[in-house]
Image 1 (tube, rainbow, N blue to C red):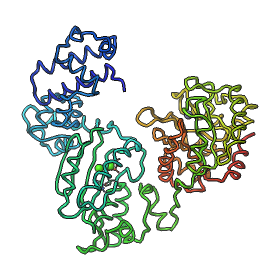
Image 2 (tube, rainbow, N blue to C red):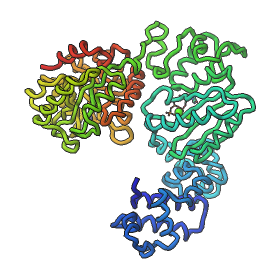
Image 3 (tube, rainbow, N blue to C red):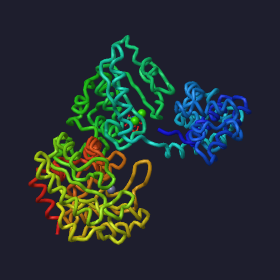
Image 4 (cartoon, helix red, strand yellow):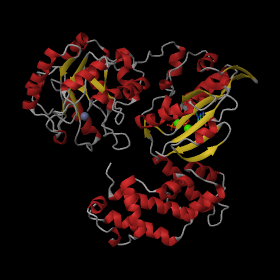
Length: 575
Ligand code: DGT
Ligand code: CA
Ligand code: CA
Ligand code: ZN
């Protein structure tokens, strides 16, 4: 990874932030700030200057010490000075510094006098009126802080589930090898397969003398310990993810897992139900008066209120409890139900593998079929295909289908929906395909009504099979465009076409509630990888998680069908 000037400037600014909080020498702090400004405004990349052996100390504000730091950052990617500071002060404290009205001096006071390390702790202290008593604060400031903290908390970035997974897997593997540890389980939104994760909740059971809590705090990836006790601890990982660990007794494991899996709304509904039974459910178990009657397994908790075990993905209080009572919980789709993938790219547009490589990889995943859906010409940044190149690809696929027996390659395209709802390819060319995947890649800012009309018009084209990534969102990067998805779903039902659940963890689009709506309207959903390289088929599991949150069963999903049945369904959308 090349180090750019902006990376170096960020490191200098971060060092300055920490030094300010620590109350370091103001001249030193200013030196880092000035250096950050110089580096940021530089016309040339520092890495090129170093490669040319130029003398960095000739730059304004860069002395010998800072020049050495620039060299260090360019070779190691970071500065030891920063690593040391990060070990002393949690990154969350620096986040507090970003609140309006809270300069380093005040943040330092909060940190030293009240041991406030996180925004949550800050909010709590303000609510309890503990801040106004500090020198230089007062009641008005306390109110301002509370307001700012709440506003900031809403903006706090959540981790994509795929990003969180990397850290969860290695943390769980680490905890499992701690002496005396018996069970380790992830709970919270991660277990419910939400598309994004606020923080990670982990439960362990362990023998009495197990050092699990200490080992947790000493984990390599931990950048700061927020709190640590005998049964609970919270830390920040270097990547910025917060992890809460709870140690529970084996007989409470199920109750704790149920409690910390949530969602909050689901738990509240379950506890309300328990009261009707004269029971009390908490994270330690199910109790009548003070006697424990269940809690070792989740199943026992649900049984105590006459319910079957409910899949974590459904626990959002969206009707799952009523459905369970009436024995009509869905049999949720599983990854193994998927028989093929209907949206992927190859080198012909912006993918990285050949058609043949994609087909062979698909075979390894046990797929019966794949559909190649390159971009169309309108998406020029992705080398979209025009009619001539698409016709050439059709011939190539015919040839490959002669050779390859295990996987059938279907002919498709991810055609752009143009501004007026027409498709970016003549009908007579589309007619030669097995299916047409269509999507919006431009004009995201149209008014809601126009955007909706545009998409409905596209669906009414003679050749239209699947609406890809229907909302266009990119998680943490781009909001969904304004569109009436309810109307789109009803229209798809009338037209007899399908909607995609794009399984790329950056998209996960359709979202859960719209999956549920599509199911209710009888619109089949295609769970597709939108693979740009053969490894991307692995992303399908994220799509399955989202589909399960949307109550989808095998029969609600288009690409669970065997090839012959699929072809029949596709043909109905083509002309
Ligand atoms: P997140 O972290 O924002 O992605 O979402 P969750 O669902 O993981 O929420 P989190 O981490 O605050 O708490 C994990 C679960 O623990 C939550 O889904 C329900 C349970 N829980 C935590 N605190 C409370 C509470 O104060 N009341 C209730 N009823 N449940 C709680
Ligand atoms: Ca959580
Ligand atoms: Ca939590
Ligand atoms: Zn697309």
